[in-house]
Image (cartoon, rainbow, N blue to C red; front, side):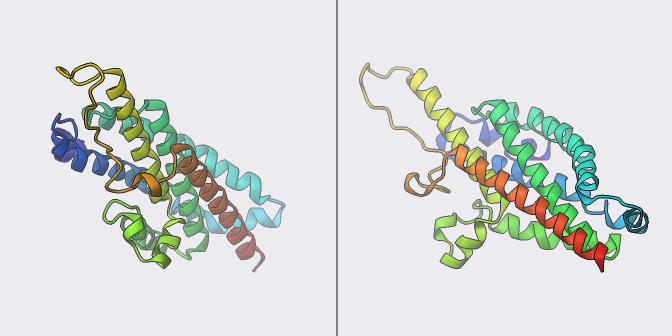
Length: 246
């Protein structure tokens, strides 16, 4: 509701000067919020039960089923969180993209955050340390997500680091999907009073952040997001295996 109260009026405006600035911010903040959901849901899961985990490992607990149980239970929580968030933001901020497409991005981002939180929880020695590490992870996601400064304007080395940020792929995928949906709506409903065959200037919502020659398609962004999720899940498994053998 805070996102809607701050940006909703401009995001849903018919004035391009308003929605071109506001609607990308609502998309970016939504992506950042679901990443925070995932991280905060799981950051204290493993470290909080470390003594029990060590005892069960000594009697044959396997890591893959253990991690799967975490993803299953906490993932179900992410499912409901993402749904509630989108049900509030998407209509009130006048998003044009399909709800199912945006929901898929938010859920994938939340699961990626969930895997990151499990990595933090597996590394941390105390619950307080795990919570304290979260800002060190979420701040780079905000800075390198592409909303504050377009990716292509960052130094080359930082652009390479941005490839590892799930916030970047969530924002780019959702924003390009929204821009594509708006263009399709304009094709289906020409501007009132325009003459047949006349060319009506089209606003590319994603241009300021991801120009046409420097952007990925929503499918490509979603693939990157899934790849990072798998990478982070493997990292959580490796950290747990290393610590449990130590």
